Image 1 (cartoon, helix red, strand yellow):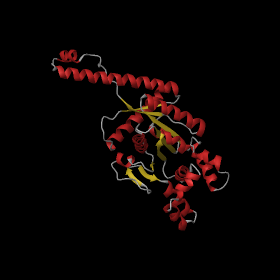
Image 2: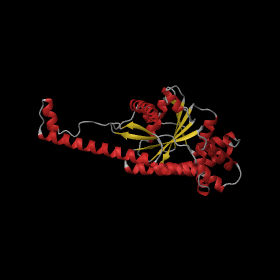
Image 3: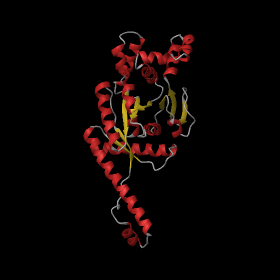
Image 4: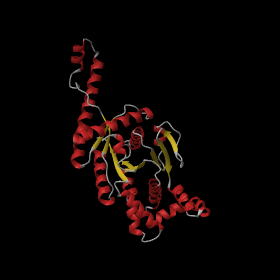
Length: 315
């Protein structure tokens, strides 16, 4: 499977995972990979998040579409602005601003949990139905809130029996549970706690929401380095050079750390495969504190290569 075929399997990809696993960076990389394969992509950033634009070296996102690079546009979504737009489109422009200005959305969301989430998901559904792009990628809340966010439609259907809110919830759930329209891509690190959480999230989303799950993206993979078992002084002697004692000690410590990290990630990758029967896409650790377009391109290429190698293993 090439990147274009992989990206065209569904119209909406929701990227979710524990906070700190690189979910936003992976969202950007998935978008760049799809765009480089010739698809138009719309990236959606949730309220309170600000990483997508920075990853492309662009100014902060607004509610309007903004081009980040060729083939990739992005915007932010907030419940208040989604409500404003909904009311405006239904002939209630006069009261829409008053409702959001007075904090009515917060009052209603307290009385009916899930309202804010369904406003955002309803807007996503509208964009998907209107064909805003070949592929829409939603950078979802962190894993704990992701389940609440994606289960909001079922929650509202249990509490609201009729009316526009019920209809919106039904339509959102129809989108979420249709594999041709939506799939969830979970992101994790090859570490014990993130792996535990991604496994739990996956089963909750499948069993309680009914979404289709794509491959799990395992971020932060350290490339395997051979020869770490060789003592630095022996390696230096074989190369015809000499090391000071402090240099040899520093190299031994570095080799010990790298070996321990490689052993840890291998153990967690096996554990993840045993606990969760989903394909894995591996992307490398970025040895930098800054993530820009160069790093996004690097991760996009790694995702494409992982998709190709995954098919080769399965076939």
